[in-house]
Length: 73
Image (cartoon, helix red, strand yellow):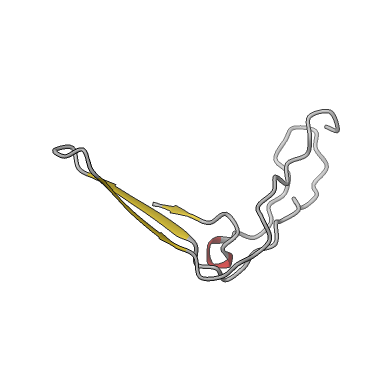
C-alpha cells in the first residue's frame, strides 16, 4: 500500500535537520493537499495475477524533489 507523497492526511510536522554540523533549521515542507491518494497492490503467490486499486480525489501541483542538490550542500 502506497500513499500520495502530497496527501495532507499523511504529512508530518517539519523536522530539524539531523546532519552532523548542520544548523538547527526546519526543513522546508512540500505543499500538501486533501487528495486522499492511495495505491493498493494485492498479489497472490498461487496465481499470476495482481489486483491494483488506485484512488486520487483531488488534482494538485506535480510532485517535485525538495532535497538540496549535492553541489549546493
